[in-house]
Image (cartoon, rainbow, N blue to C red):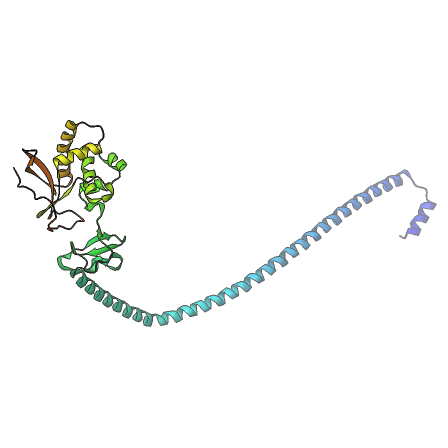
Length: 320
């Protein structure tokens, strides 16, 4: 039915109450349908936006996948190149190993030659720098090498007690542990000496030994000997020396310190020193006096035994 016909019908027929109810119902239905249509349109628009977002995400993932496939192709090509290189190196390995074996044999032969030459030089008395010597590979007479230090600060190997004919590196500098206790104490300064020993006679013995070997000490009571005696100090000179070292002590106490200092000298030198009693004459009186002797052939580490005759008074015979 067309709109004109409906309008004509409505004009020729009065509207009844029933018609009013139908019109109200139709209006409500229309409003409901309009609401449903609006909701569906909104949902449709949301779905379209969601589809667009998914399509964009899919495009990005597709691009990323394409890049990964391209990188994978490059990695495969690089792996193939490396595998080919490995095969090439493996084929070349046997000749290289053969050359290395030849070099190793040559080096071992040269090492044996050097070791033999070093052994011969050491047996002739040479001192060889420790850095240049493989101690385990040196075969020398007696089978033992001695490691020493010298004045130049270097470390050397030698056969025990052999002197270097070329005198390189200066004199042998003995290790602290190689020295006699009296030598070890004599190397200390006053503070270290006091910290090491609380015994006054031991400190006096160390200072007395230092005075014999170190001109810087100044107060040296030792005298040159002769024939078999290298140096000596008398008990009377030692007493006066002790009183100069220990200011304010009495003559009687100094006499006691003389005996104790001599005992300390003998003990700390491991009896490398000797004591004798000699008869002396002074002011018409004869008396017996003790002397501490360093014999010319005494085995003092770092000092060569010497039988050279020195100027000085001859020592008397040992009395008991």
